[in-house]
Amino acid sequence: MSDQSYDPRVNRLQLGGTDDPVKVAEGENWNVYEVFHQEKRGSHHVHVGCVHAPDPQLALVFAKEQFGRRKKCVNLWVVRSADILAFNLEDEDMFANNQEKTYRDASGFKVMDKINKFKGTAQSPKAE
Image (cartoon, rainbow, N blue to C red; front, side):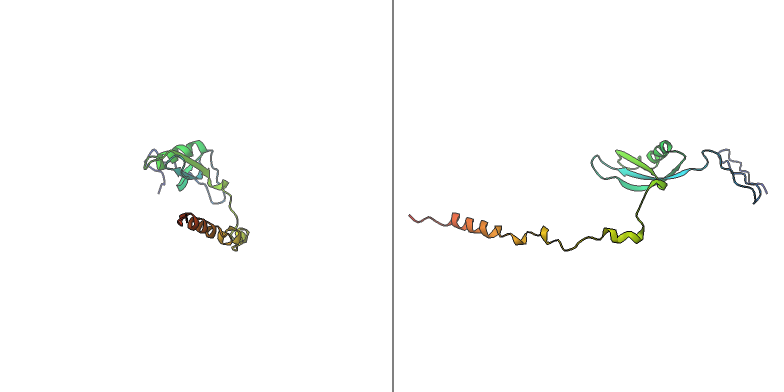
């Protein structure tokens, strides 16, 4: 049985025997690009999905066609998935911080007492 397609758009990779190395021509090995979408100017870019493309320029075109026409969009970012760096899960202690942050608490200041005392003296009737 032949695995040739009658569809002219389908170009199947012809593999030889099992011992032969597979040769991939230029442009056949497409990369995965992550797509980030911005709905309005000044808002954050949000990850909306990914596209497969041979180069970044075509990835941007594919992203526009896939994610830029369905809802309001002012900007798109495409990033090759292989270029995204992340910390290992074992390094999570790097993000641990001091939960005791009393220096941020304003409870040590007695400003409200002074304000209330000032308001009380200002509102009391003056003796003549």
